[in-house]
Amino acid sequence: MTTSANHSWTHAGHGHPASHDPNPSTMDIATGLQLPAGFSAVADDPDLGPSIFMSMAKVEKVLREAISNSDPLADATSRHLVEAGGKRIRPLLVLLAAHLGDASRPEVVQAAVVVELTHLATLYHDDVMDSAPFRRGGPTAHEVWGNTVAILTGDLIFARASILVSELGSEALGIQARTFERLCLGQLHETVGPREDEDPIEHYLSVVADKTGSLVAASGQLGAIFAGGSRQTQAVMLEYGEKVGVAFQLADDVIDVTGLKQVSGKSPGTDLREGVPTLPVLLLRKAAAAGDVSADAVLALVDGDLSSDEALAQAVAALREHPVTAQSWVVAREWSAQAIAALAPLPESVVKTALASFAEAVVSRDV
Image (spheres, rainbow, N blue to C red):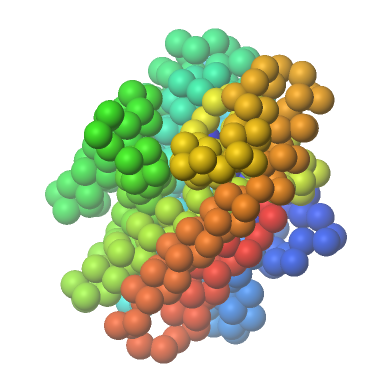
């Protein structure tokens, strides 16, 4: 999805976590990597912490090798987003799921690179379709090189992901193919909008599940598979990943209204200005249609000309204060709670604690 805070997991030097962040990241001095909020249990564990940090350092190395190209233009465009940093949530979940089994298997790191490459490929395409001017604090690829080059770069990166996943065997290839199918369907359904007989909110939740939840789910599933995890463990991580991915995106929807630019790297109201449908706006439309006069007044601002910063700020402030924003947090937290509940079959461990903490953190952040 295009609505995303950009600095919860970064390389040192790219992220700029603010001092008032209630869920600060944890950095490993040796690797210069940071865990996103909610994973302090990982960093504090004397065995799991170093293992995760070192594995993520390997992921970063292989990721850069995978996108390198002898063609200067392809190399520059492919590196554009990788070098801008990012949360790396998907490879992190691969590694955490792998620690429910044998995380030392080399296929685990390769699977982690596959999911991040797939994610990066979708970002190039999303930004073109949404005409997004910025990503991760810098200009998007299509702003630098044009739409065609950006789209082809996304295709190229997905091709690299496909090469790597083909080396992991038919089961992984099938998961990758089905996930990419859902990513495409999610984008298609978002583009055409809900049918006349379809509830707009249910439609949107299905889009979020396809565009965000599917790849996060695949990350947990692949980690469990290549660590030799049981079928039950694989099923748990699949369900957890889907639900926590939806919760993460819904939280991003609200942060577009409530977040701070200097913390998230993204100006409040970006989604409003770009016309990206988000949960607070969909709930606002529903309230207005039901006769809520205050919602109707806010909707007039949201649907107005938001080209000026003043008009955008007014619309954001009005939406932020309306009850639908708090209602959106409630929905996001419900998905988070479902993700935590999905972990119940797993034995108690630092990994299970970290996964539960992350699910809580994604809906209690302001970035």
